[in-house]
Image (cartoon, rainbow, N blue to C red):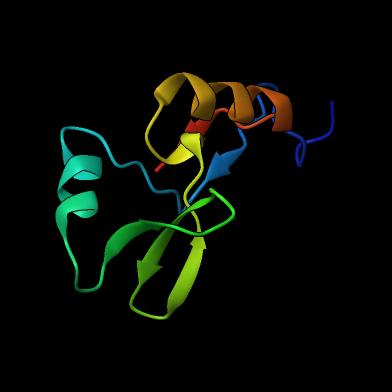
Amino acid sequence: MDPITPKDPRRIDMHSHYYGGGLVEMLEARRTRPYLRQRPDGVTVMVAMNGEFPFTDAYHDHRVGLAQMKATGLTHRL
């Protein structure tokens, strides 16, 4: 093994978001940014300070987030 390649490589997501502990319900109740809304096509979106984006289960269901981490080879999230 060369000195540049670690024996136990870690892949870390340095910028992730998780909305647990009642935050989803709070965001659904809000009407000013940030808040959640459902588009006519049924997709839930986060209306944030700089636009909107699909609010997928990975943002609030830890099981989905962990499965995505495993699928992409991530070992940690911050």
